[in-house]
Image (cartoon, rainbow, N blue to C red; front, side, top):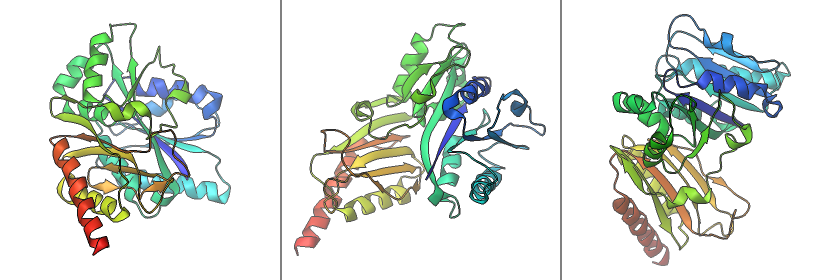
Length: 316
């Protein structure tokens, strides 16, 4: 499966500068890039200093609305070109417009029947401008959502303003995201990509900022596979509008020693992927939830009740 990453962030937060630096790094030499700009004429692609990379421009609108179909088609065309031998790349990076809501973009990539089986969501990277970031978070809810959905938050323009207060605020919005500093766009690519769903710090978070809440569900005993399926079904059917993102590592009764990786965005869930072994000594189920209005205790109780019912049915 081809890893795909999304670079998001509000207008002027440094997405293109970051991407330009990344593409100069030999580690990303075999990268296909899809860029988007809000408006009729695209300009950002002119700023990308790419050599052998496949750079595709989507024009005429925001990635989160009008051109999502174009995004899916473009990703599919890139995969088809590679299959024919007309393109060579090992990963895909999407740069969104500053006004984009990342959730519909992730949903489109996860649900399209043609491309979803060939793609693996690697990381969501959000850039935040230290000079204007606080005011942007106050005035634009979409910027809060960009930060809340991110695996990595890149603080930019740190030479123009102190980042400490903003970094603390972003940690309250999304305590699970690694924060990095980019000096004029320069960041080590190894710190941005290959984001792991089972990083230890991911599971100790319980914080809130305004309407965004982040918490972790834990269980020491393994879950039945049916319990996991029912739990995700309930979330999709009843909590989708409030669920920004979910990701976790689940111990499943029927698959001892091979934990399930789960990942969802609002009402859309990837089929569980299975690890060959546990990544560390912790064998407990850990599910991180980033939401707007969901109750951690209710979700924890839901897991326990569902598994009790499944256990009772299996005994009877």
